[in-house]
Amino acid sequence: MKHVFPALATERLILRPISPGDLAFIFQHFAAPDVGRYLLDDAPVTTRTQAQAILDFYLSPDASFHNRWVIVRRDDGCPIGTCGFHKWIQPYHKVEVGYDLSPSAWKQGYMTEALHRILTYAFAEMAINRVEAVVYPQNSASIRLAERLGFVREGLMREVICRDGRFYDHWLMALLRRDWAGADEEMARE
Image: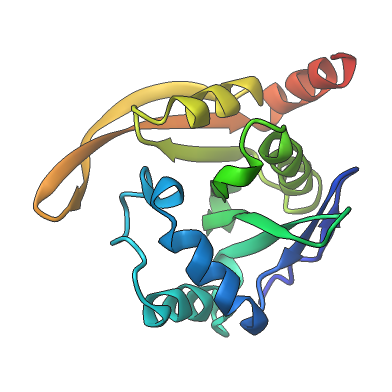
């Protein structure tokens, strides 16, 4: 059965499921060098065909085990990034999270706000017990974000990704349901 991922809202953001009309944004967003710098699991986006392939992946009829939300600012309706889940293994109650933000929206707390919302959704609505994040070690901003949300570095996956003949290490980070409750309460106090 296909899981239908709803639009979600935060104080400053709307997280809406990716749609066919997002092609121009997806191309512009993922073609930006600063956005793709640490996204080593795929070739850099340089053509609309590659952007269309991203859309096709998330819109495919069998997309029940992954999704992507476009992150849109409420105040001006501008899309500023994406976030979502990959590799949802329902019998194990686990999923992998992915996220990216346009440089013009960096250091404003948008991704913390968006991820907080989708993590709450994962634990409350999807019956998830474990959320994993796979992060390139040089992406210190992403590591800090994940740790701020309660993720723990579980281990360095050595040479786990190969791109253009070069191998890259990545941190395996995870957040458990039982840890989220405490992290969520702590964030609310801040």
